[in-house]
Length: 72
Image (cartoon, rainbow, N blue to C red; front, side, top):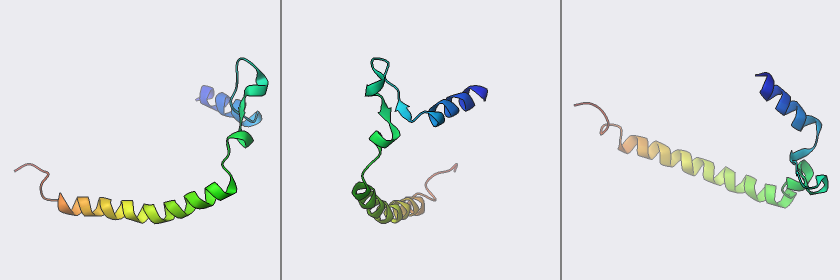
């Protein structure tokens, strides 16, 4: 538990998501790895459409296979 907390604090205090061992200037930072606002807007619309589709598909497969799984 202490190891996880230490790693979390180390990444929280420094903005490096993936520190470089060759050159600190090549490290991947939080700001450098973030998506643009336009991309996040598109992903929000796609997720808001696809989440109900996935849930409906899971409900349909549960309904179709509800009696086929089990001991005789």
